[in-house]
Length: 391
Image 1: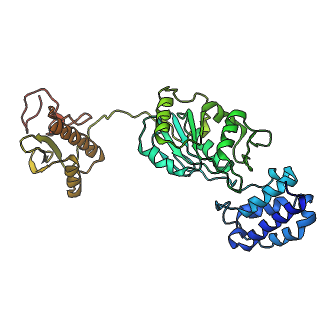
Image 2: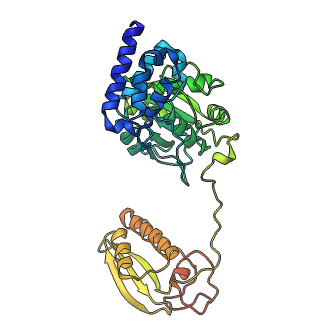
Image 3: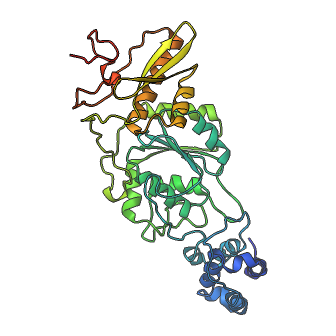
């Protein structure tokens, strides 16, 4: 343990390094640390003039935190907290109120989203390289996978993004925890939050990180998060195959959405879609899809809505056909494009598998039965020919 005089000397060295770096002058980390230290006589008795000098360098705040690997103000405050522990409750890096956005997840971050209604989220802590292989594995039960680097704003973001999705019921915490000179330990702090919650000052109980203070969320959010999510502690684990198996195992429990979700936090409610009613014809005409097994091609015939054949196309894939007709402007309605894409995919599968293919009728009811529409007739059991009406 260093003597207090040596600790004060180190604090001065760290602050002078920050003062010499112009990037720090408009940074919240620097300004919050200086303002915090000025409130404690154990520091100002020796470093008061230096702190005043540092304040004179302040510029309008441009960023709350730059995420520097070595943050001189943070190291200075850590050292000062060893002299007076109350200093640890003062200003903290990266705790600015985040801006939300519509949709899910409501807050930005280093993550990849897979499926809203899946029950498992994965936090890779400082092991960002785990995000891509876990995302690319497309495990059915995985909702979101992302990293976490701080035990304050980072955990706040994680809580708010998870509370916005009541389907997430498991949080696997894996990867390497962060232990740089700044003293962030987001993994250990997240586990402590799950197990012990926060105290009256919103400090995570038993968290060992230097700044486990949650300033921008309420106690209700914290307690709802603890009830909604079961945390699975895999800190240090980086084996992708093992993590994939764990994700699948947890998802197999099928817990369903959390019944106690806070309504104000849910960003994307599930809406009931209605079946189509009236069929609106595409003014550009309609198509007849046929697999040509002799030549292993898909054939697409284009008709006007009066039943007149205008063009014929063939290709080996559904993608080649639908991109070509879109380019030619032969389809003008989105519902028609969706229908035709589905039919081309079915016909392509039939062509490759040898299965029978019958073109489905377009969804919806056609009011004017005087208009010929083979996409409506396609699924009929009658013996009508092209150009004839179903009776």
